[in-house]
Image 1 (spheres, rainbow, N blue to C red):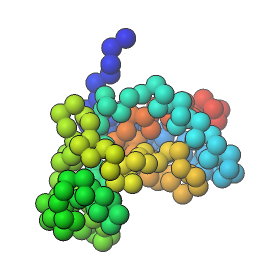
Image 2: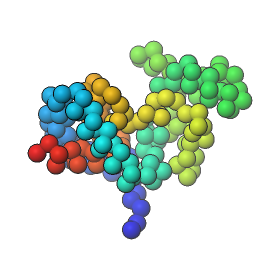
Image 3: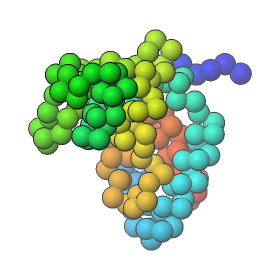
Length: 166
């Protein structure tokens, strides 16, 4: 079996083809009891990531920026053996919400083999991406919809979800 090749354009195009279906599906599941929704998404997340290797894609690292919390900045700066202020000056900017995010894409820590240079110390937002296994999933419906345009795993989960809720 060949490894799928992912690129930002094909991922975005696939999401665009299903955007109405995905929006309707997410609106439908948002009405489920929170505990039931959390359990369902946790199972879908585990099943999907058992089948999909993020190293074949890394689109999230190529096209989006996580939010860097102060503890993330401290941890990564320590890993790189620089001061936190240097990490900020070299790699980060403050966005319109007042959060630290990357100055540019792709992530400067993304290596040519799709591995992360600071993987063990990566930001919390990277550790939890695409956030489909988090508690209180009903609060993440809009973010999940947006992530269909970035992450093939989220797309795959929604296709599977369609069969579950029918």
